[in-house]
Image (cartoon, rainbow, N blue to C red; front, top):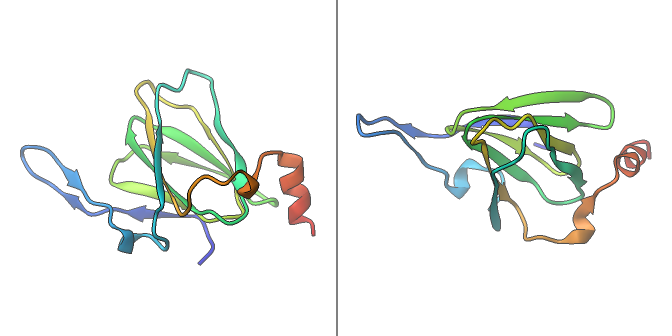
Length: 132
């Protein structure tokens, strides 16, 4: 399925603290790269691109942030603020990450290693590709 969706992660509750597990069988892809965004200044935006092939899974490990998704035809905003739930973003969607709370941390699991040719970094180019 090539659609944006929230995926709930297993949560093991314990009086000593909670634990969530993320294994490859939870996602529709095997992740090949993991990175995280943190110390994002107030008012700053991250992302601002689409992928031709790569899919990503985003989790708010701490705090919160908004993920603006543009399909080329409509825009939707997803707020991530739970470490036991993530947002699956398949390829072909423009994404921007905004409104990071103080201490907000975004963990990203990507379906591939970094490849610059996979990125569409200009919104007009992205929108034009959707009109083809």
